[in-house]
Length: 264
Length: 265
Image 1 (cartoon, chains in turn green, blue):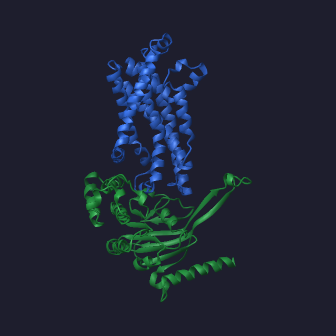
Image 2: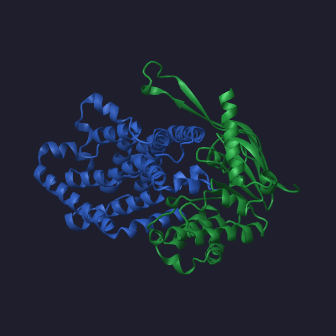
Image 3: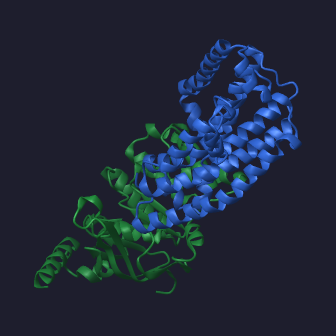
């Protein structure tokens, strides 16, 4: 890998839950839940990397840590060459987080007004912002609908607005958390096409967290398979699965993990 | 400016509510006009309010108008944070290069701007319809008192937002200060009618100094020499509480990031 844009070493996230009044005998006791355990990961520029795993595998927690929304409990990471623990601000200027969360917009405002607001948060000067907003609206084919309130959009349109917002500051890395959740097959195809032919072609790195095996197989150069907070395997899709399907590979991996745990 | 514009657009998108807020000011002023009429020219009222010219309506008009800044300063930071958490936009903002402190401070711009507009409407209604005279008002000392009031109340509001960041609901700071300030700060009655020990307590709250300075400036034309003590008290209060509030907020954010509860509500 010539140009590494993301690397993690032993990245770990533990959540500490205080027992409180739900445990009257030991109200000051704590339980520790390890959501992400010892992740070592390297992703190169222009790569589409899939974080694959079932619900609760730790994909979203890992994504949030890399987006600076969560503090790691242990380990280290560099995003675009910047240290995750010390250079949060610089990392934020290089990344975009696109989730399937429709609620991350102001529903009473129009699409264009929403983008105008987020462009300001990205520090895009006002005179450039208007032009940039029109550019990204055109890229996601939302120019005509941009004057309508966000609440009037369909799920697919809302997702495209999420993409438009992600594109505003021309980031180097796109983190996408379940990007096709709730999308119909045509909208899904359009998004996949966009990731492969617009973002990857332009040298952008895309990290896609998904539990859709077919999606990972279709768009990712490499995948990391997560289960119970651990990265169980990673590599190019074809190398990992050989002649098998990703689905069979994934099932075998989960079964293997369960056998290992039963043995312990 | 981005927050101001966004919040203005959001506010006017609910047109009926926007208009109602101004209508409510009118009814509130009318109500206190009749209360003032009931109290009339009673000697005890005249005596208690002699420092401010003896007119209860002018006195209470300033009190209810400017106590709006107390509510906004104390409540807007935590309310806005909670609102962004609930509508789901906080995380989207936090992945931009704008810092959280900047987001929190900017998110209250509209609340302060709108409150200034509301206070203006209070004073206009009082002046035009009910004969309150501001002809001899000393505007500069009043404006300085207002700025210091905003800073002092905002410091308390940021501490309050720190609680919301961790506990999500049930903020003891805002509750304690709002109720105590309303009771002891001289919003509806002068603190001189309080028992001595309560009067002493009232000097712990910035609203006491704010209202005293603003009333003296606007109603009696009090200059810097008359309100200097109040302004100094507000400066000292802000110098102590502002750094504390910023440290509290930084600790609260670090804890929320550790717990993974930044966007929870």
